[in-house]
Image (tube, rainbow, N blue to C red; front, side, top):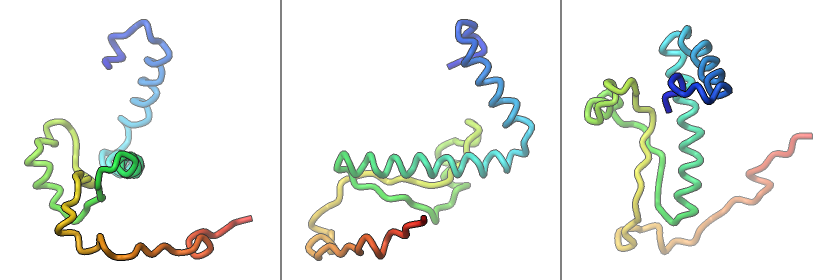
Length: 115
């Protein structure tokens, strides 16, 4: 959405101006760190959405970000990779964990109540 060209949306235009006034003066690495944290919020939502739809997914780090950025042409778009999210359906014939009983910790072991 090219907000600057949309004079009929003054509230959205003001919001866009506010974003620019906050982000543009900041150092690029500060903005990158902020964007990376925002990406992890979206990642969490995507993982839940995948589970809801029966799609297998997992967050993946430990890749070469520079190489991924190069392959996907991200630098030209002003983007950098932070995390990968492989999606798919598992092959039950190769899943050695499939027949194992699921083990879940108790709620007391997982949750701390703060008063």
